[in-house]
Length: 299
Image (cartoon, rainbow, N blue to C red; front, side):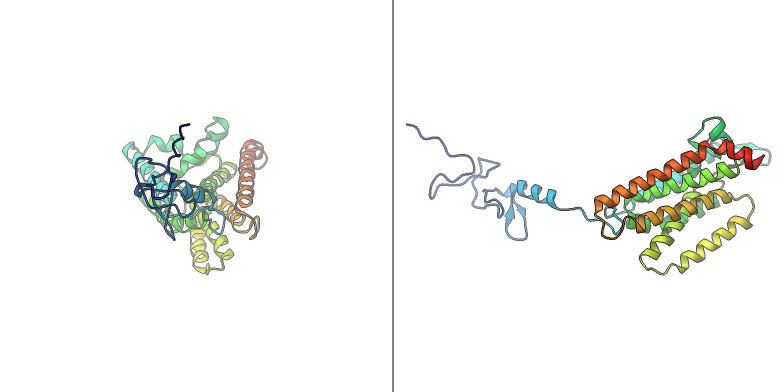
């Protein structure tokens, strides 16, 4: 009776050469410290003690939980969302400059008319995109520099606290909250700028800083100065600023205090997602009932 050959990677007898379990044509004298299978140099993954095979390393990685921030987001190496939004703001302004036409003593880009925040356009003509596209357009270089600098200062820290996803949700919902209040209170006025989102960042930094027991006096001073400018300087959309600030305070409170310190990462993510969805529903409802509110309060 003919004996069957030994399986690859096994030791058929004393003194016989062993071969790698993944590369059966390679002899080796090293075994995985976890499972004991023979491994060649190409399959050796250095461990704290000895070497492990790729299969054991992959299995170990599946069992390791990804590191999370205090507020449930994945740890951020670089604030990519902040940089991306800044680039989009600059690109939007460059496109405005490149398409500007003289109108009387001033110049204006058709992009401003098409994509600025205009309440009647949103409701009467179904131009819902104005609620967010206005955040990537600006009224001048100083307007862009102010919002861009605030984004540069506040964005990276917030993104590291919250993670990419939560930070992006905060920025977008802050911009939308500012636009919705503009739609409700000043539907006949056009406005551009990321100010709603920037004020949302101010609000979130304040709430989260308090939760972390940080010194927030500087943030309070900056916020007070910006609110003063909002109401003292003409041609500034106070509705975008106040709407964004309220949105940032609410969303920051959700991230900072709910569902509690002892909640698992999965439960925290679920609670945050549900509450953010509820906030979106609120903004949609306010937008839909806007015509009735106009009739009641603005006529």
